[in-house]
Length: 206
Image (cartoon, rainbow, N blue to C red; front, side):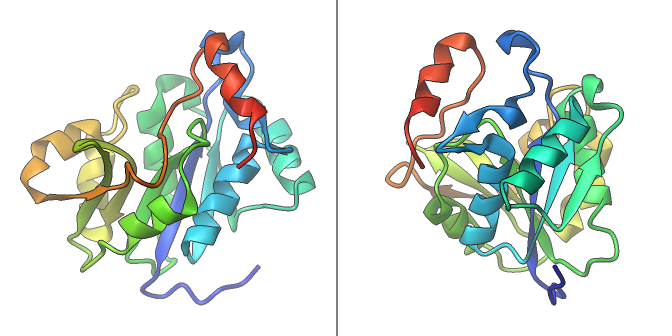
């Protein structure tokens, strides 16, 4: 799929985790509403208004890619992170690096294991964009959560500080005064699918 993305916003779906607490099942392959979570997240980003979507894979990469293709909701780019076991930080770096040359002005970061996030919430965060220097994040009851919007001016700093499972957390903490919090608690529940006890949440539909 070819799109004019100059000056637009991209979605980065972090879908590389191995689901250690789920018995080694990659979260991206879990079914929700009849589709694997990776396809759900890609469709979510697209429905919210992202001009292009890059999905970062790691554990079970070939199976995750095949599942996304079968679901008919493939991203513009599959980005494989061979260092996925090092944690979310490496996947975020890979996702940001994959946007080089695309002309996008900002990236909204989505976690594949948060199917409760809605297109309306993502769109509300996207609407906070003002310039490549923008930092914004969804808030729930005033507490910062996902998705997070990173203006392109911040990408080098975010990548430099992304390590382990921290993702952009360290950078955002250091730049807390610059973050525009966008309340989304009225639109969705940002629960995570982390343990077997959380799997009941996948029985519903989007």
